[in-house]
Image 1 (cartoon, rainbow over the protein chains, first blue to last red):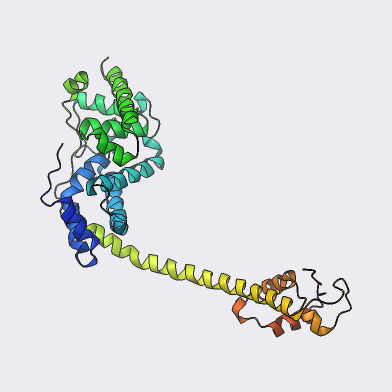
Image 2 (tube, rainbow over the protein chains, first blue to last red; image 1 turned 30 degrees about the horizontal axis):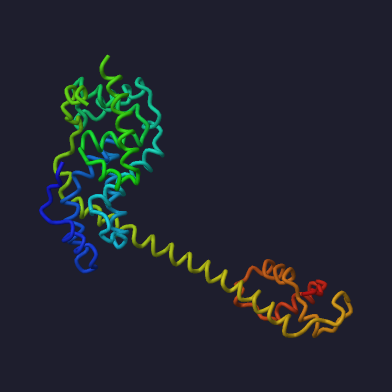
Length: 185
Length: 130
């Protein structure tokens, strides 16, 4: 998936790193990457309310630490890394998203569909897939989502998660095999 | 991953409230601004604690230097020492007791205060052998 940005990362970074243009740069950064960051977070935390909280925390951290961004990574890679850390922190504090059996995952998704039907509406195949994804350990779930849905190259995921490409490939392979076993019954 | 691709078509079941991304940056900035004073207060509180700790450290440092400069008693184990040498042999323990009992800012303490307190409390000055 190619990034569709109306402003280059270099121009955004330049605006963000200068105090007098920082707010303008921040607004442009949110306009450019907000949706993709939201999508990344939502896949992990499931509900819109939680995704909203985690996304706002991500953007606040980005604002507070923007001076640490020195252009050694792409801006989006840096943001994705913050968002991923925020997701993992949120999930570590949220029991309902941890160590789920297939049955637990099914119950969680059914309750989500009943409570939040306007923002979660899955057909049978999507429900089965999401159910299977929820049974994966958190980091495998992350890798699977980033590769399967976001179609990010392994090299980019490696920069975001600080994991080697080889380990990511192995992780994705294991995750995909497990999911296929669960959804093809 | 042909089976996965065939099954789901990669469509996600999540939707977003309409207009959610409008003014998202402004909402985030509002939250940043709300938190700013709290961070300031924390910094002020932290610096007060640091000032107290620094004052206490300075007091102990000065008393150490003073004890070294005034000199050791000839017989460090003797309890029968002059008043002057007693001042020079106030131990860290005595100073600690004094500071704890007064519960005052360490920067307010004077050597005379300490000595008069120790005399008043009849605390035996310990001759410290360095």
